[in-house]
Image 1 (cartoon, rainbow, N blue to C red):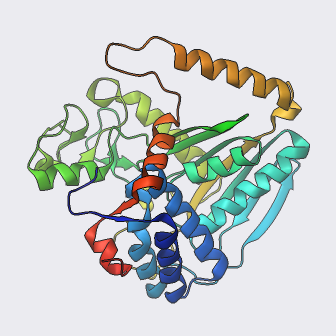
Image 2: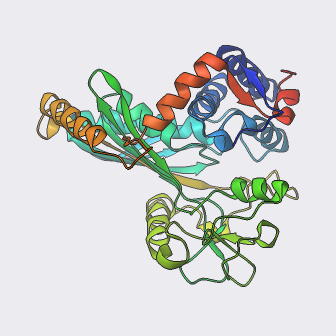
Length: 345
């Protein structure tokens, strides 16, 4: 949510400052390019929690040694449709984009390809990598598990992370279909915002230290899974899928075992995060032409479905592409702390 004190910055200028900051912190050119690309994706589409505001954090982790400044990525092809990318403890964006490239390359032959990522770090917005797959002509999926912040259904402690699931697909003549969602009811940033504004939270999205749902932001100790107090088993199950594919399948770190992302006492130990991406080549099924015709028909029917009064029916991604257009015209909002760090104020 944007605040009144935010700066509006033209995208090219902002992108240059972010990349310069990462390079100044010692990141390799390839690492810096990937992280900048992923953060700008988020900031352009309105996912500000995963946008350029993270630049300072990544630079601190590079300086502290948690992140390898010059990672040497390696790719191990395990089968015609599977591979593992070793991120060498570098910026997670670098490893994730490479994983999606490998998945697309393999899927072009095998039809479907899954690629795991090991020894990685914070992924950022999962939708950035799903979008990269869609731009390559694939139906794409990306996920990661993260440090514990969300209770289980009827749970009384943090267990899963906010574990995102992102999907994208190409659409002929249009921007891709794009769904990027957390498996928690709300992000923790929403709690912090309500805390600062002194406003109550919606019902059934967060809980206190005993796992009891609360609307008081100052009492929040954990988030509730997607579906809230009554149907949170759905979100908890989806979060488990992210953990299964990212950590269990790859033999990396489980959600409760992570060094917290913002742990100020240890910024030198790598976190060994795992990610997972998937690419599906439409050409190897009904064919790319048939897929293109079908998804256009599907989206036309979806957008033409009657909305309730005063509303609009939208496909996944429509809201984000609209926001991207708005920010292209008006500039990207940047909070004051990030603006000062990037020397934009």
